[in-house]
Every structure is written in structure tokens, then in C-alpha cells.
Length: 349
Image (tube, rainbow, N blue to C red):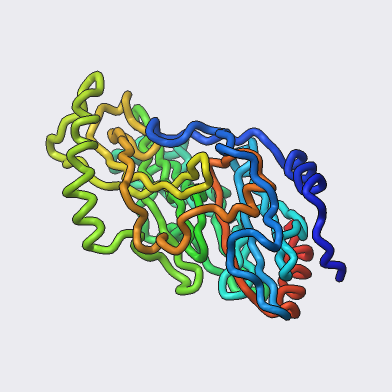
């Protein structure tokens, strides 16, 4: 394999070809969509200010970003054998490199059950649903698939004993990944038969790939600190809305932590709070819920080892994506060769 490092001009040309328009609704406190970096990025040279790669070893970065289409994602693999990073290739989808293993986030169709409201028009109000009124409905599930065949399911399955009252659609939106942590939103949209309108509710999922399960992004101490120091700011912002959002039966509560990239590639975190509101003013997060995002002064402890997007990736992406992720690994040159082959073989999946 030829590991010759491309010159600066070639890298910049490649970066220009990868430039795309990025779009995703975000809270007003976040960086604007499609923001440019504060200074042009370049693929790192071997004498950049970073720890050198030992002889016989390779450092790999896999980074993904959202393209113009909400579900269109693209991953890039960069490799440094001691002469600076070079682009090995790109592939569609979001790809992670955790403990030397490649993982691909994949969406697959799955058949669920729902009620045909023409057959049981008041199922949402206690009407007994006859078996012939229950019909199949295709939805999707989101899986994490390892190149060796292991699979992890990122969104909960519908329980077989769950009451059927109308249509139900579950979605998973991938927001970010940092190292082996995946941040996403699991949302359920329901439309009860006979109801005037539907309902929706989301919850944040933080998935630890190495552990193979969901975890809390914030420790109990961090959660308490966020409630003490940031919740008052969210409460003030809610009170300034028209009409104002005020606590009644439901308190203002922490819903999730968002992350975004600053103009210099640094990682910023935001605490997103929900407050009660009318159905007409519902947010995308949940029916009868408004949201406000407050900047966090420090990153959660789980993210402290990933404070900034590697500058080599900035050399390929000339704009800041709002949905993104990256993972870094240092392997033997032979192991890196294997990762590169598997990354190429996963194209089109």
C-alpha cells in the first residue's frame, strides 16, 4: 500500500469537493447552521503540534457528518503512519471505530402493528379493537452493526402487550457521537383513533458502544449542578416568552444535553430544558412541551477526553456540520490495513 502523503493543494481540493450544505433545526443558543470555521483547516502534516506516531504504528480517525438530506450521512477515514494524515476514503452512513472495531449505524425496516381507524374509529377512547382491525405497518429500527457481525439495537422495541389505540411511529435521530458514545433522540408519534390531534414525545439516548447499552451522560453530581446553576437561567427564558411558560403541574426539567462545534472546532455543550405549554406551542421534543437550551460552562466528564474535533478533519470539512461524530484509534500498521479494507468493503451497505 502506498502511504505517500498528498500535498496541501490536493488536500484542499478534496476538501472543497466534500463541501455540502448542512441543515438541521437547532435551539437559538446553538451555532448557526452551515457555519464556517474561524480559519481554514488543513490536513495535518507530520510536524504538527501533536504526539508523533511510533514506528510500525498508525493513527486512524473516522469522522461522519450530516449532508443536506436529514438522513444522508457520510463518513471519512483518515490515516497517519508518521508522515501526517491522509484521506483513505469515504463511504455513506455514520461509521465509528471503537476498540479497533468498525461499527456502522444502519436503518432497517420492521413490521409493527397498528389499528385501522376506519375499522375501529373510537379505539383511542376505549373501544374494544377486533382482531381484524389490527393491521401490519412498516416502520424502521436503528441498529449498530459491527463489521464482524455483532449487532446492537439503539432504539427500544415496541412491546407486544402495548395497548393498540391507533397509529404509532417510532423514530431515532442521530445527533452526534464522540469516541464510543452515541447521542440520539428516540421519539414516539401516536395518533389515537377518534382524537382531534396526535401526540409525540422524545427522550434522549446516550449509547456506550463498548458497554453495549444505554448510559447516563451526566453523573448524579453533574445533574445536581446543572439543576442548581443552569435551571434558573432556563426558567427566566421561559418566563420571557409570549405567552410566558410557567411551572404548573409540571416542573421545568432537564431533557438532554446537546453538543455542537464552535468556530475553532471546539466542542460546546448545552443543557436543554422543557417547560409546560399549549399544544399549539408544542416543540419538536414533545407535545405540550416548550424547550430552552442553556450553554454549559464545562463539558460533561464523559466528554472531557474529546474537547475538539481533530484538526485533520477540519482540513477535509470546510464547514461546521450540526450533526457529526468522530473516533480515534492508534493501531499497528497491520491492524490499520485491516480497518481500511473493512471500511472500503462496507461501502454501499
